[in-house]
Length: 78
Image (cartoon, rainbow, N blue to C red):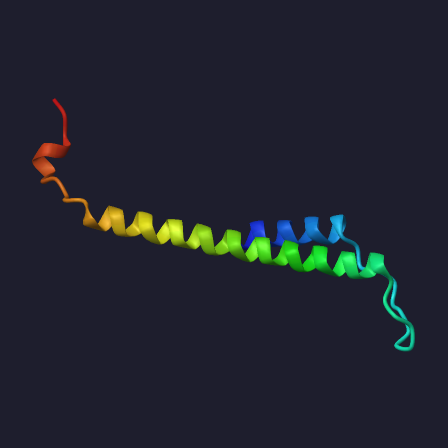
């Protein structure tokens, strides 16, 4: 999961490079504001994806735990 997170962050940085710094007395350009919103959206999407994967894994773990286990004699086939 960490490897996927690092790869996703690298792709985000590649797709949305950091804009050049703007002096404090100048308003940020429209393009810089859009780039910031894109980065925030990408971060939100990545967080939602992580939450969805964690929720799916938790549901699968609960389902596996709720399944009755077969006795060893029934697991083998002739």
